[in-house]
Image (cartoon, rainbow, N blue to C red; front, top):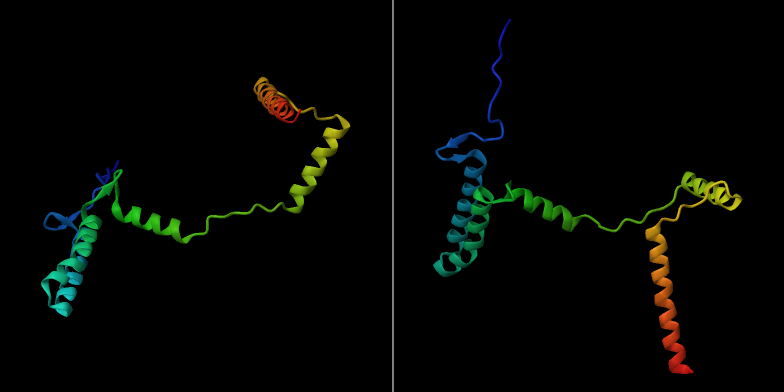
Length: 144
């Protein structure tokens, strides 16, 4: 019988560039390159620092920050997807659903299906009727 070696720790990325993984290295490399370009074109340390600070912070966050045990890039991509996707869904009945609804209405009218009323529904109904009765009584007292 032949034995096979099963890979262990497949969720841990390999450290390629010293203590950094490949992704971390390229995030930091991109942030450093963009910072260098900002400094090269502005040649003013104050404005370079002002513009490069968010770039450095973002590249460091992408490389090292984890939110709830997940990489920061996941948070950024999910946030962008949420902001860019439409969030309104209008449900439209299909012809089959309309037919099914008509059949259920006919069965209820003929008495073949009797809707179940639970005690919680009865309590809710009684409470709403009491509230409406109190509102009517107060209106009658104002006008009468």
